[in-house]
Image: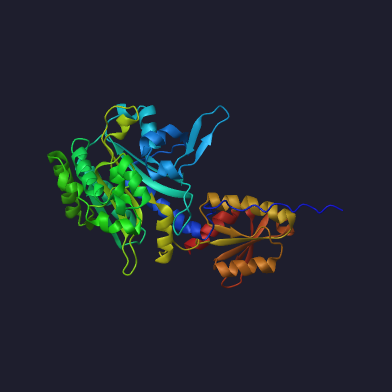
Length: 429
């Protein structure tokens, strides 16, 4: 007799995972705090598709970046079109800004978003192949004050969710006018040291020299630490802009560290770039997000020249830190009453009564799947509600409800249509 084929057991794909309670309480707190704060700062919410034309990211994020060349999920349609799961949020928001005529509205346009991103990289602590970002983007204003405001938002958000050990690493990459001179100086420096760098850096030396400063390989760190700094090669306009950003941060008393090796992993940045780190004694700093100015991206993707600045925060790592720091995420709902039911008729009437209580703003708990009155009363007692509302077969037929005072044990039968009024009267007492 042939062996019966074992049924496949489905599991989440490598690098993906489910977000489950009680962890979702931290996610809810972080997202709600972020959205409320973003609106306070004058930002409006935008949502873009998780799938876009692959060319959007190749041109926007950069063909030679690790994100596009190594990590992006490509999808081929039946018709041969190349699509991609979004590896980051900014190019999609830029596309939406251009496609929907937002450039014709009064500027600046301030937008925020939240959602999943996808990168095919080796899963490790705090890194997932499906991960979540919260981002801000501002279009149509070149002022340094907006760079500082984006950083101010981040600083306030971390404070609001109970994370205080953060520091900002900041640098300026200059603009298309002054960057070529810096690129030449950097190439000269590395040209005499190319035999001592990793294979990836040898490739970067030919394709994108600024990425040399983004290398994480241990053997490259001593060379990287002595490399020329971009801030020493800024033009007058870029130097003035960066100076103003730092002056705004000083005024806000936001701590920051000038990091000449900071370049970020994306090609579109100009002028200000920054990363936000969690600083804890004895541990290597962990990046929680970053951003900067990208004044040429709208034009690069086919729009008119438009200054822009933004930030993306990695929510997975932030939630992990909130848990580690035991950030309070709020207590259980403060239930006032508990619905106790018995029998099919009691269940039906309880559902209707639950709706009435909900509409009246009276928070009611229930355990409709249980049939035992004793088990339900036990739950009511555990929740610490003031009153239990008992609806059995007889009460359902009579159109009544038993109100039981959970402290005194005193019970009173009242008509179903008067329950809400009676409860409100008792709560006032």
